[in-house]
Length: 416
Ligand SMILES: *Cc1c(COP(=O)(O)O)cnc(C)c1O
Image (tube, rainbow, N blue to C red; front, top):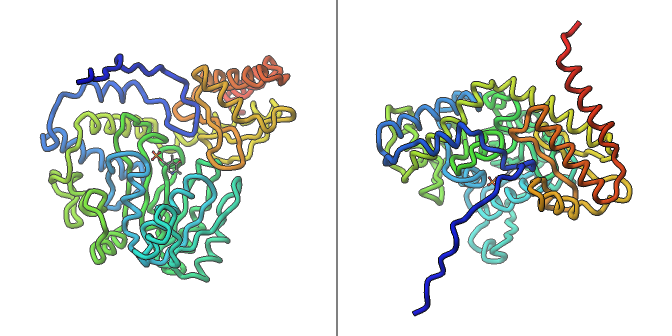
């Protein structure tokens, strides 16, 4: 018999998470996680916590949709649940303009493929019923484009990412919703990167039937918890009539544990799967933090600090191509152009966790999730400038810091 391999206990260092996600977890969330006692998934306070989370989620999403709850897992778990309403042979138009909407479009192709289409190319099916519209990296999906394609295709479903984190672009949600209403299409939105950052209410977008987000970006609850989802009654009716090929990620069945049964709120959830009291308590605290901050104020804070970061890297000679307020996507200037991966690697090696783009072209992504203070932005800017200088750039960090100071002191001065 060989000896079992037992490794030393795993230690993971604290890094500065300054990428597209995950964002830094608030100590209050970690405390809620660690202070929770062991309680089973049907214990009264766990069930009450889930009902309270459901109610807070409705405020965060800005909706009266009864079917609003969390899907255990990551962003793609919530997206999988939402996209499960798509059945083999369903007609779908998917707009893709970066890494994540590209993966979502693949999920859609897998779900809409007939058995023969799936067998023909199992890992990358190309079903005849799905149209994928490719929008170049760095560009947004426009309402005009959505209107054009939906008018021609008249599909059952249309899909788009609200904020495409791969390229840092905001897509036209209102244009998408309007086109869905006009052509009788059920819209599905990946709101993984926008929920908890932008101030929007999903009930203002009646063309969208299904929404999915994630725990680790705007909601800031990485201790792996819940991907928020919300579905309209017509979406739920469609699933009720046609079913879906999943028990666990079934949009109707998964809702039961959150106290949503047969389209109604009930006093306590019924068993769907074993939820963790630790996760429920952490998620509950994360939602409390965001609602206490206030959706509108939080959105303003992100926009204000993103502008400080954007102006600073622009002054360093970088070319910013994104328009999201939680993330800056940029090309390096002059001699450093083309060395984006190397710079990101150097930063990551010293615990400064920025990211390259995951699909071509290679760009640098710097995120500010839960880093919305002058001190945090100043730290990020200085680490980034130093990394550029270490590779031979000639960034005048003193001038850059003066610029940052100006941004922040001007904001503190009372308005005339
Ligand atoms: C991050 C992200 C995802 C994936 O989320 P995971 O939590 O990694 O599963 C999907 N879509 C968008 C737009 C994202 O930004």
